[in-house]
Length: 131
Image (cartoon, rainbow, N blue to C red; front, side, top):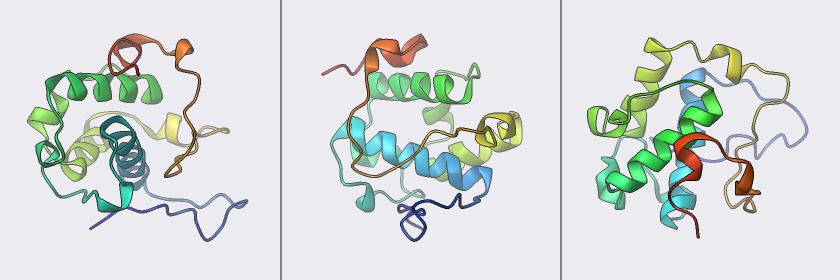
């Protein structure tokens, strides 16, 4: 199953998705950005190492995910749950992500969006992967 931009049909209307789908979309977008990949080529059931994710990239991605979900996550998340599908299912089962995902102003996940100001990042997400 590939996750693509699920909001392409309705730009101005909030489309409800499951927490797992929301996390998968966010992870696909961030992985594509971090590894300079086309998000359409990322399969959520594929091992992340197949796309070239190494330990530094994995820790950076966990840090960004921590910032987005406002949670403390295990730094080994993507080694313990090596696919986007498995890691997002784990997060929904083990953590209360509903508060962040149902907030009034959710982070927009768009494929090919412009880079945001990374100077305001907190945690591990701001330490690695700067270009």
